[in-house]
Amino acid sequence: LEEFIRYLSDTAPARAGGERGGEPVALQRVTGVEIRGYLGWLHGKNQKSSIARKLSTLRSFFKFLIRKGVVDANPVEGILTPKRGKHLPEYLSVDSVFRLLDSIEPEGVLAARNRAIFEMLYSCGIRVSELAGLNAYDVDPAAGTVRVFGKGAKERIVPVGAKALTAIAAYRELLRQAGVAVSPGGALFLNRDGQRLSARSIARILKKLATACGIPTPVSPHTLRHTFAT
Image (cartoon, rainbow, N blue to C red):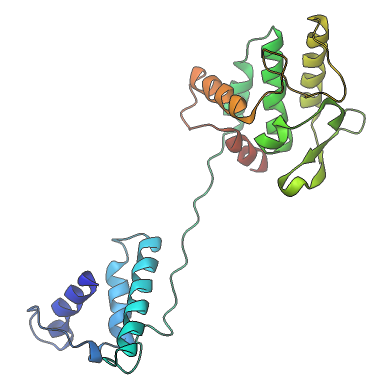
């Protein structure tokens, strides 16, 4: 409000054709023209979200003045709030994804698990919480699909690429060779203790791999979801 009053005080003489001089402001004489001029003055100095917040402040302020009988009309009425810009989500290039996958050690149960995890995230774009909640029988290699329980426990069937299915099969085979008891009803991805791997652990593994292979963009499982969509 102080900024708005300063703007009116500094520009009122200029609008009248005189010199700028910081003249007092009569709120009763403020019109939509001054409001729009103020918004134009803010443009380029503030983000749209800040401009929208300041316009909301003025709208509330003049409603207050009407209730107090200071002004008869609200000059902000009819002035639309500027639409806020949408930030594009971060995603990886195809080369970055390949570099990430190729950075995973070629041998070992944990390496095979990590490759299967990130092949899955990149292949079908499911949420990390959905991936962590998968059981072995949710994957249907013959149909090339996976059954996912999303938000609100809603079930959906998602296509999965051949590379991800191959990586899952390789990981499960290594588990069996290592003597780990695996069952169709058990968790698809296991931690070192043979328990279900958590979403937080998946995010931590991904961050470590991305840092190791020099990917500058902050990478999270959600980044792979956006990468899949892109």
